[in-house]
Image: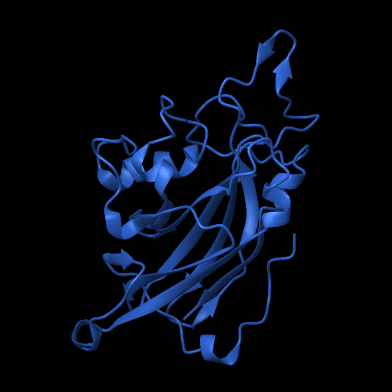
Length: 232
C-alpha cells in the first residue's frame, strides 16, 4: 500500500510539538499564543471497496495515538466508538479489534485497563466509525519529538492464513486478519514528519500487547487505509 504523498501547500504550515491537549477540534487561539501550542492534523482515507468485501461489510475500527520516545508519555488522539466504549451491538466485547492500542491506552490511563462501557474513552477522543475518510487534530506544545501510530482492523476479512475455521473450531470473534499498526515520527525541532510505515500486526484469536513483525499472509488488511497524511 502506498501511503506517502506530497502534502498540499496548505498543509505545510510547520511542525508542532505534542501537548497534553488532544482531540478533534481547536478553538483556543489565546492558549496557543501563550503556551506555544500548535496543531498536528491527521487525515486517514479508508478503502470502502476493500472493507465492503468482508463478511459484514462494515468500516474498520482504527485508533490514532502519540508516544513520546524520551518520556514514555502516551496520548490518544482519536479512536472509533465501538472500541472506545467496548460496545459491539450487544456482543460481549471484542478484545482482538484494536488490542495494541488498548494496551497502550491502559498505560496512558495509568491502571493498565482498556476502555469499558462503564468507563469509556472521553467523548472528545471518539465518534462514530467513518465510512470514507477521517480528520482529527492533536494540539501540542512546540519543541518536542513524538512518534505517531495508527492501528486498523476490520472483522470478517478471512484469508488462507487467517481462516474462519480451524478444523472443527471457528474464529470466535469473527476477526479474520488481525489488526495492523503503522508508525511515523514527528520532529518538532526540524519540522519533519516521516511517512507512516507498517511495523507489525497483532494476533487473530487473542489479545496482545506486543506486535508480531511477521507480516506474511496479510492481504486485504494492508489495503484498508489507502493514505495517511500528517499536516502541521
